[in-house]
Length: 205
Image (tube, rainbow, N blue to C red; front, side, top):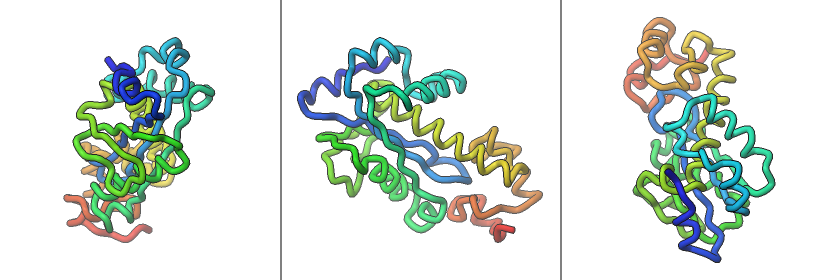
């Protein structure tokens, strides 16, 4: 379970937790979120059940997300890197771009980020934490905000491109998504640099 161990270890400096979602899908943007917990006591009272977004149900993610957006004891921001940026920069650099966008306006002294790499280009000192989304409440909250934000984006895109079922697969390479590409080709929201997409390029109609 997460804790505030890392955040407390840097006190009294202000710590932001960062996480991303969407590095693996064949379609859609990569999305990052940053979170600063301003009052840890209130956070624990309301969000003690928060964990890595992959470990909790979709329903619970959405409940936490909707509450995290409105409480006054956290500050958060979301950053997005587009499909075009993913294809031109590569997914790692696009992920760093999304993370840096998520940090814009966040007055943190230190950033802790899920993974094994510091955020390239960050203006704030960043410390990578492997499996940080299951160790830090700030990163876990960021993982939920990033995940639900991206799922909402993919659901919106699915309204114009229902054949790919992005509202169900979030752009990942499921069997249904693969079959849809074979039948309909790809569209402007597919990552042209990704296999098998790069072998099946069709302009967006």
